[in-house]
Image (tube, rainbow, N blue to C red):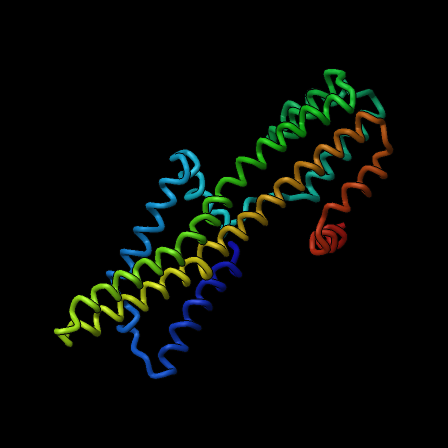
Length: 257
């Protein structure tokens, strides 16, 4: 569980509402269902028009990874690759075939199978880089969707403000309706800017970070397989791949020895 993501949203909402209350405002004054309907409905509608349903479903599912990061034990993967390198150096690349068949990660399994089949380093790199590009494009779609939503929300908020002001102008003769119209106008803008800058744009940033972490993991795996094919020393391979680890992972790995 990514507690910082949860804390970030809670802190942003509490700070804004708390600041409003401390200034003497009332929570009821910024609770406008009409404004929420305009901003949420307009933003969602614009996003639905902009992207195919398959991409939208992936974007919805990807929100889970913001709060529950995908598991990836880089030190363990490095140890796996080093073990394969050691076995291949001792008994030949064919010796790792049975162990490769038991791998769960399909990317690493495919790259090692290409190596076992006798493909050279250049061919393996070319084939696996295509896979990396496809995966990266697939992970980038939710990022673009939330970025687009972040662009639409403030504009839809302005539309809501204009609509509220139109309502105010139409009811100048009835002072009892002026307050509600003005409230919808300003609150719609607040909702639009808040939705963009406190929710969807931060979501896109976190998803972009997850995407980069995934791509980096794939690149590390590929470099490890290429090193095995080139017959590099397992110790050198481990040192090379350890560069992909964060300081926290390096510290954890060293303390577990």
